[in-house]
Length: 470
Ligand SMILES: Cc1ncc(COP(=O)(O)O)c(C=O)c1O
Image (tube, rainbow, N blue to C red):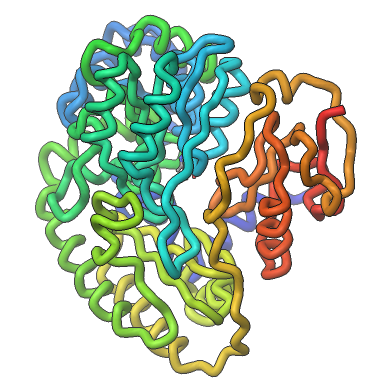
């Protein structure tokens, strides 16, 4: 039998396609790695051990800490998903409270299952007209802290997938006054430190632990992430132990070396490339902001919807009545432009310092043409995040391990979810184990499905049935 996966990838890599998706090296454009397979080794003498780093890996991590402005940096070869689970587990033990922004990535909820922590969910604001989550307002966090003084930590995603950065400075100040640590999922913000066009990093704004997917916006391969720690609030030995528990005992030297090369690039050569990248981004954004049928998520949202600043490296276009899944298909099939994500109401193109101006020009031209097509216009739902704070009945861990049964999805309101229900993209759960399923959640998911969105996490992804607690 032929190796179809390999053959398919080989074919794809030879096509004239342009990636507006991750990883940030943009199909090799930003990679500088000589004959990688000859360097794919294991922990032989002289090459240190990620899980007990005291040699060449420890040095590489120390250099990365300096570059990213951390006191300690840990290389993570299993993506930010692993870094987030480790951070949650390091911060909370079974039964301890943790304040969690409900638009966090599914790995944060996995961290809740693994740790046994008891979440107190808070909601982000909703960006008017986009149907996507903005930031979490300082007032929302402050209120949750006031009502839950015994919580150990606050976990937020900032920037969000679409680029919304919350006011981590004020939030950290309040959390720290109340003895809580601040964990920020900065998976989409590893590039922030390298040009002032982008928002300040959460670490610079006072967060204690931040998790960055270097692979999303910097030139490194998929899976390469960084956990950065600043200050003395994080229990470092515990974090290290948990990272070693969750990660492979054979971490890839190619991954670790690629982040080391990237760090060297950022220290020595990237400044000029970032200047060019920002110039190109400004040009692209200028053209896209003139489209008639699409609205570009832009800096006018700063200071509103819980957003301190939006990351302008993310190209998010929304339409009120054109299905963006169809637009994304057209971009792929007719123009060879592959988006990072699309859902009925919006689509997102991810950019990085490895992008070429020709790619940006191609995207602008395609959109200028698409803007003049007479699409079938159907008003679609744009309220995905306008949902009430879910009621947590039991902890995600207890719900995950309890007996469950299958229930008609349409009749599930009022029951307690035993599984995740995650529209993907963007990968943010609408239901999580242990919380009451609401009529609003059912309506949102039905609409998402109707307009062609995919739902994951459930036994029955057709959405006929849902697992509920017995
Ligand atoms: C907001 C957010 N956090 C965390 C992750 C997980 O990152 P990784 O793919 O590095 O595991 C993602 C992945 O898409 C994400 O969008």
